[in-house]
Length: 518
Image 1 (cartoon, rainbow, N blue to C red):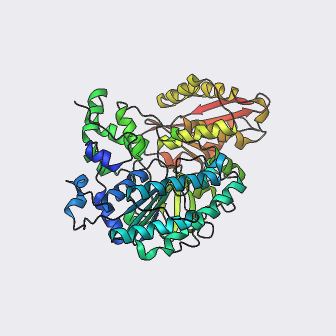
Image 2: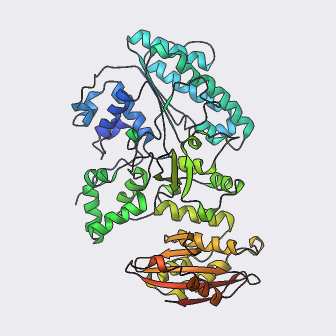
Image 3: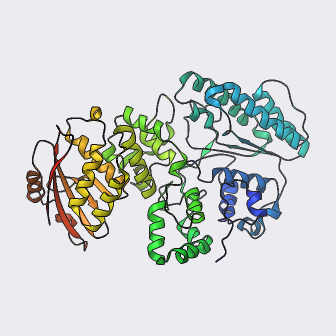
């Protein structure tokens, strides 16, 4: 089966169209965006989620390049193919942390110069904001059409410098003035679109652009970026068939694993989840290997430090409630760790209460396991034998608890002596994160009618109920499981049930003993 050309690393719509690369047609949704959403629009999505391609597609649409859209949804619409001047600004490629405001000024001047050259408009004098305003006005006068402004990664200078308050504040003030030009240029503008990872508060950066409509949580545009399940199984059918044929897979099991590993991102109260296109494309390109492609492109150290600073319980970081208002409070002095984790793509919406409250959870197995590993590396410096980790996962999948527990002992033995605590929850947290890192379905501190289960782990054929004791025996832990009937809600699943009592030895910094009962 011939391998089709995938748009790996391609963020330019014209290149996809002209080279006939695989494309999930979003132009019908883009038509809805530009005709129904208003004049000044903002969209936040996690990194590598297709924001830059969306910006490029918008630019081509407003430039009237109809030939690029042949056969796509917007070509069959009533779109008026006028040629508007387009100012497209991408703020991602600059050394903001080391060069500060000089990097921002250089980047903006470079972009504005490129637009002036493209449309043969003379550069105006004054500071960067004056130059921006005059460029918009002159382009409109020269073309006889209103101008379109598209700003990609508007928040990159601020995110890069968030740990350096002085530089961050300087850049924030400069960007506030620059973005404020958009409101004063209203009469010359046809459409303004800004994208980024986060939504900084109106007070900090959008105080002058207070007519900006945020569609980040709007259910009408929740599928504007990313790949839906339907798009996966139609647009990428040849890739699916090729992976199945090459690896001898059963179709439904493969599709289910794709969904568990890469799907799960949800951006509104509407119950529609998305695949991150970056991970999906690299999965297909690498013959169906399930790797952490998206997670590997970022470093969540800042977020983990924020979790630490705000004392977020990593055992219960998922299934957390957050209000819609909390998504609007991203600022240096006012950051909600859960909101930042959502905006960055490490958590996503799992449910909506109907009263403006969202429930957050990890989107999929890729993020759940990789983030657990990052937490373990940061808090506990686990560098233990990788073979022990693989052994633990395999043994639990096979129902071999003794082998799994011995592997966990090897993992515990790799933790540096100085960071261990005389705290039962410390050991519980490590075991939970290890299970998560191994890609196992694991719930901790599960509430039941009679008490709280320390850890519930489920594999394809088995359910394990773990109770941990630091100042007690494994036998006492088993007795607690029995007396409180922790496994009662787990019956009827068609899986073998195990009760596992575990005691820890603080002096040896490891698992002391365990007892198992069916």
